[in-house]
Image (cartoon, rainbow, N blue to C red; front, side):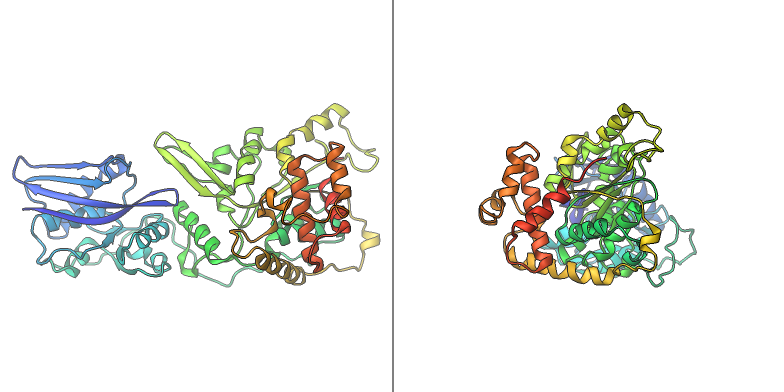
Length: 512
């Protein structure tokens, strides 16, 4: 009887901690203690491990068994520690001919029959293990495809505890494989991805299409206001199709978020396409921002990281949801405080809002068909508060389409627009190389007003708008960012007066 150590990983959001699982088997009354701030699901590992070990041909000793999860001051949650606990105990009670390999990370939940079940968050867990120097890991077979996406660490899969015990030299009989019901819905068969919606399908709306292109080129936020059926949703849903594929950092972050959320299909590799999240206006703040009991889970804003968050019928969203977007729009991440700890998720998304001009939607042009009172109109648009609107770069009216004028005309397809967007993005990456950001929307305001400020004679119109109180300082900076994006689309080295004028027009769109 003795002492043994194995390794596992504890996750809080995407941030992980390497956990040392210590097992001590000593003389005394038979007992099984699990310490180190485990939550209820981790504490129940005692029953799972005892039953799984017996079914795998290794009975736990009738001695005093103590398992410590270190660092002991940090809360542990989830069932992913089961495999590490089982191997540490079996090694400590002397049932392995040789000690376990140093630096081996073990992740997996045990069934009572010894089978290994998949756990969420394997991708961020192994990224943490690799960053802490681990070079080998074992995960459930169903998590193996996801685990193999992590470079720099040797990963093996196991179907059950008996198979893993035999692999490390234990004298146990192989466990017969039996068909088991799936614990979750089976993944659908992989097929060719559905074609993306194309901007060529949008009839007319030249100004709105141009605004969407500018938004894609500089990662700007966009508000579309117009009557029902004008094409607001069509334009927003086609925006991801002109965004460039994700870089490796964003791809890893988004894939890790989906892994924690339990919705990541690793068979297709890391997620490269920009995501598109479209929550319904009845969604709660926890569903949009993130939350839940215990440690908070990622919400729609994190699932939209490096992509598009579209809020259709934006004034219908609860004020609490809209106001909760203010900090993520500025910082690019969200920090959620709950009773069991603090969780941080990346949330750098492009916000696209769509709204009607009034509750009935007909207050457009002369508004002859509108049934709303002036007070109802004001109250409706006032649901989009000033602080939220101040963080939106462009406010673009989307009027009804004149089919007689637009008949026979075909707009540019997404592929043509995407080529211009990629060129503009490359200019930005080259300009900001080594600075920690890659798009105009991320440039700090202080640098915009110094190093990247246009000539004084070029920004006269912008300074006048600030002096008149039409723009806040935040609005001033957002207009400059827009002007830089317009210059990049035009191939100009710096924004001129015409770019600043266009940016002001996009920024100050009328809320009719």
